[in-house]
Image 1 (tube, rainbow over the protein chains, first blue to last red):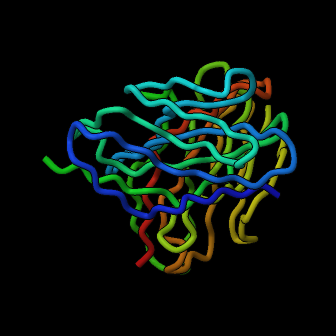
Image 2 (cartoon, one colour; image 1 turned 90 degrees about the vertical axis):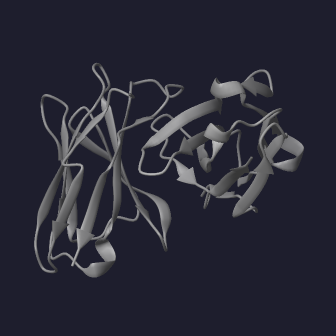
Length: 113
Length: 113
């Protein structure tokens, strides 16, 4: 069975600073990997996904993530955060044709002025 | 806007009652997934339907059931409700092939009093 660990429950970052959110997954084969963002009271919006190919994936809102098979990681990064990036971020893993998603516990990002 | 719609947005009911949550997938999407987001369990996969047939089951209680209709909309039925069923219930939809993305609806917030 697949699983996801997000080690950081809460991160506070200054506006304009860089951000990195950690994600480690457990799965026997090559997984499908995703980052979703959830703003307060909102649904889940896909930031980016990895299925195969280039291990550095670009997403929306200036986010990117790098798949590292040797470390079973899929960390999310943004070079310069904006106040609107304050939200909860979920890493998820799927596998197979009709993949169900297994989510991490989420990381809440607070942006201070 | 993901194109996935869920109704109602909020639902408040009492213990022991039965409710139905509705999901309309994106146009052309054949798969519908249901997820539950609660404070203690996080985001969990409940059940998946593909073109009207149940395809996969997750941590779905026996008191819960779902179906997908010929027009591809789906309903999640929750019965004999308990306080612990209070959660945000998400529906997601996906096209047929494995590398398609799951797009999430805005969710239905269920409060059981």
